[in-house]
Length: 330
Image (cartoon, rainbow, N blue to C red; front, side, top):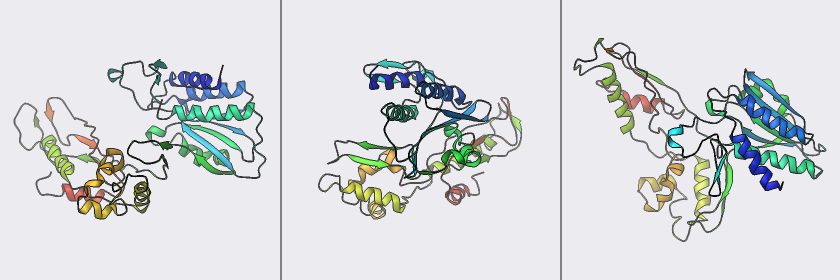
């Protein structure tokens, strides 16, 4: 089997392992990786932070003259609602030149590329100056308590001697609106701020037209949040990214990228590219909340009533409170 064919086959088989988190079941993915490594004589170690919540580590030793490199990916994937899939998300389906499956992008494909690199180096007997560590962890999609955090807290020896780590995301993009390929890596990510909002009201039968029920008050409060101003907030690293982007933009189209804060105040039209959801996420805080309603009953409107979970930026509590702090909000 040619290397490319083998890599595609490995990814197909990896995608067919359902590691939806929750519950995770990453042990199945870890066993698959361990079996592949073992066939080429590469030892690995698997640990479980909780039953079934497994992470794996394998190493190709170098001569120790340079610090090691960790190739990291996570085994778990997010839920796949089959109603919105044209193929089985865990079927490893290849159609029209594409391989489909939950985790094909985030991020089993990266893990298999890491694995393929390890196998190729081992088979070619390439002398390494650095240890090359393959690290596959559990629970990235739900906080990493049973994965990367567990490794950092309990198995730091897995990372001993490492100087660099390569994980998600990074890549080289070609774009019709750029004069040259754009190579970029992720250096930081937003973190969520889970908040539970509880609206309280007088109990009553759900069939009655109570204008001030707890659910109604909660909806009004959330509406205020959705309508709250979301000003541009430019971190130094974000500004540097856009400044470098300006050098890849066709003549004149990069105007304003050297001062995003100023450009946003004067509504510079050339910042249209920056207003795509992916780019705007780096410029604005307080995204629309993800709502998870939890009703207290079907027929009754009790106290407390519905609650919601709001994943917001860490710096947002004051703005959130400002949006909600009106006499009639609650």
